[in-house]
Length: 444
Image (cartoon, rainbow, N blue to C red):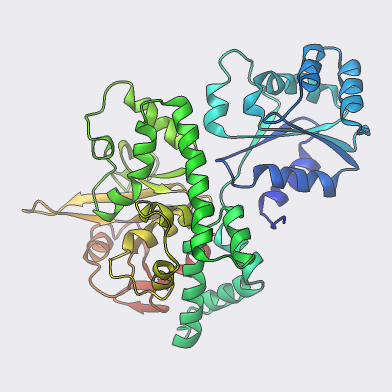
């Protein structure tokens, strides 16, 4: 089943404005829906298309790229082999998993210049970067990042119309009422548990049990691990990935390589961190040292936190030590009855929503006077010349001392301060309370 995705609209914009001068590369982690989006767009927006899947392609197709400088012959051979007729200016060719055959990506320069057809590429970024050493990267290529389904896309599938209702409630700025709020919170916890990987979403709408959905997510994590091992036989990248929930749960000031692998970082290990980031399986949140100046200009590239790029995979990583996460465990989570403090789980979900809103991720820490402890603003969002400060809690109750101190310390640049939690909409002591399901409108 094809799910409606926002990337489709981006592809439409590309086709209308740029496709005659540029190919477009859909890049992202495995199983986020790149190939499905590309083929669905080709089916609906072109009179014909040819899809070349370099993960499963015959030698005859590969041989065609030896004659790419004779494009008349190239196109004749491609059409003969596939049995599909291309129509000038009304057809598109999809290079699926293009990272597996860099020569095809290099050919884009000549194919686009020829002007007969349009070209869509898909690829996993980590492999793309590893397979471009001996080719000329085409300048005639635009990039479109593809991420897991965000909360709006998820609701388009499982609760049509409900996203608009949440937006209308957000615009009122008023309390929602406990009955409606409980329903909306449970819907959001379903999203947190299932996540935005299309395969997991499909399992959910097919009525699969949460144990079966968890098995789907474990298979995706296994694919990631296989990819990591292809470029790092030591297994350190996998260790970094698996350590994300543990490091967040302990509230460390920053992500530490040593905590993940049990050894000090060597010169070559820095590249492993970059490779994990490039895989798009994680989101990186940088510590900004001086919010008064600029979030981006004062970020400390050596001090950062990592989040999973998908909340559903994050939940599975939490319970990865169990053979299969039982339905009962998921039931407790959906009814908010797990005994552990799961603030870091909500923090990961908020990070994903901020990133989906096209914001870079920043946080800020500063030391308490005469103390070994420190204050921390979980997320900072640029708002013109000012910033919005965000603190994430699982319950909504309890103190938010860091946010209060931040509001006072940086009063000259603070626009608003928010506590994001499971609590209803509210306002108290200059701080706005928002339920977590309203974050997309805060960052839109």
